[in-house]
Length: 367
Image 1 (spheres, rainbow, N blue to C red):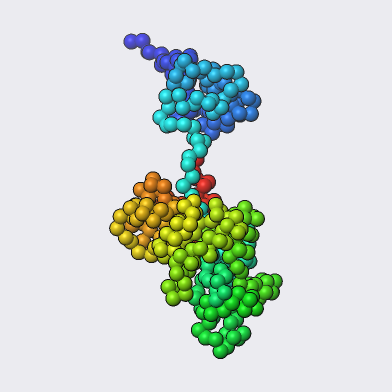
Image 2 (cartoon, rainbow, N blue to C red; image 1 turned 60 degrees about the vertical axis):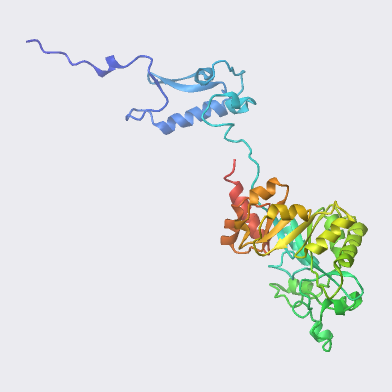
């Protein structure tokens, strides 16, 4: 019986077998092939070819061979990603991997300025917020005894000024009990703990700013402002308060640069009576029924909701109705991360730099 000669494996190999990766332990490492492909495609400018292995030898073949649509031809020197009509290719995904999507990152609104690092509702807090990359700053406004509008959150001046030392016999030191000239003598920043000697000097010299001053500066630096109107019934009527605010807007020519916000819907309604073009937003700390109907009835441009209840609102439905949705006041990273995924128009925070950092991290993974 004749001994059969073993058949060589090479005889069964197809002379024109082509493969992109050799995973069967062959001599050519996949990483080497990948590097060579990248070199040919992008370094040597062979954007109209593809590296292919043929019986142990590498060669460049026309890329048209691998296009899903054979009728779509590539010009010489053109690469696949340079095609404007790339979406016409019958690929499993739509668009290119680098297609820009609509940004869902929330705008950064500095709460009372950068109040986490500077005295709240001061010009230095606004300047620091601008330097930190905030898209706008929010500040509070109250009316004085002589009907001037100043930046102040609390009704009493005790917490954020040295009024107790300057006027010890005028407790409880309400803003409406002082004239604007008297308020100019107070320090509005010495109470804030400074981290450096330079900041300590700046904070101590910080005065109570007027609304006109804040608005003119905002316009000069081409910024935006959220002006919160602090209203007390026993101080003035909603109509009078709205009139004084509107006069300031006209005087500083900032009607289109601000969003007027308040917990008082009556004040916002009075502003709309004076000028329908003024953008207004309602602050709310609880949930209420039929929010879309309510914002339309009040002719609101925005709704500003407490961070604890904002997720319970139909955010996308409100946005489709033309209403911007913001939330306040989030400072911890765990809250900022949670709120950033809700599709909000903006987040109000004492630390603009924290939200900016988070937005930068998220933008790296959005194509």
